[in-house]
Image 1 (cartoon, helix red, strand yellow):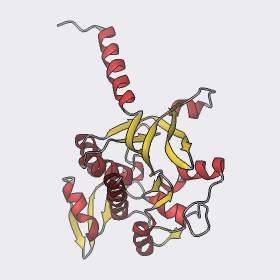
Image 2 (cartoon, helix red, strand yellow; image 1 turned 180 degrees about the vertical axis):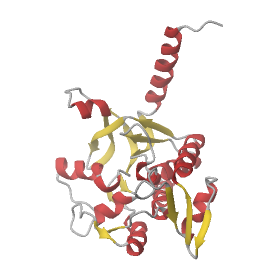
Image 3 (cartoon, helix red, strand yellow; image 1 turned 90 degrees about the vertical axis):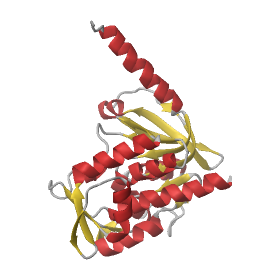
Length: 260
C-alpha cells in the first residue's frame, strides 16, 4: 500500500487535537512529569479520575533519568518498594532498607503505567500561569515550551480543573507564579514559599510526606516542590520519597473528590 504524507499529517493533527480538547476540563492537572507527577497521575487515573500531566521538556522523568552524576541507577528505601513493584520495576536489594533499580526502566515503567491507567501526558507544554477564580486555583494557563524559550509574544490557552498539583521540583514554579502574581498567603509557616534547605537525605525523605499538602485552595505540592515550598531539606539521589509523595497527593485529592 502507498503512503500519503497528508494522511499521516492529518492523523497526527486530528488525534492530537482530540486529546488536547479532552484536557481542557479535567479533575486534576499536574505540572511536572517527574517521578512524583507521574506517580500521582497513575493513582488518580487508576481511581477513575481524569488527570493530565504537563511537562515542559521533550521527555518526562525529571531528574530520575540520570540517577546520580550520570550513573543511571537509583536508590530507594523499603517503604517505597511496594510502589516500584506495582509498576513492575526490577529491583535489587543492596543492604537493609536500600534498594537499587535502573533509572531508565523506572522512568519507562512510571510513564507506561500512567498512560495505561488513563492519564494524559502532554510534553513540550509549559504552565505559564494559573487560573484563579474566587481565591481558588481553578486551572492552568498553557503555552508551547518553544514559545517560552524563544520569548515570543504568543497568547496562551487556559484550562479548568478541580485541583492542580505543583510537581515542578526544585523550581516550585506554579507556587512561585501564584505567590508573585496574586500576592497570596500560602499554607506554610511564613505564608510564603520557604525555599529548600541543603542536603540531608534522612530528614528530607521524612519531611516530604508531611510537606505534601494543599498550600492554597485548589493547589497541592508534591515531590521536591513540596520540600522547597515548606523549607524542607534536599534529599539528593534517593527517589523513594518522590513516589511516596506522588501516591500521597493522589490519595489526598481522591479523598477530596470523593467527598465533594
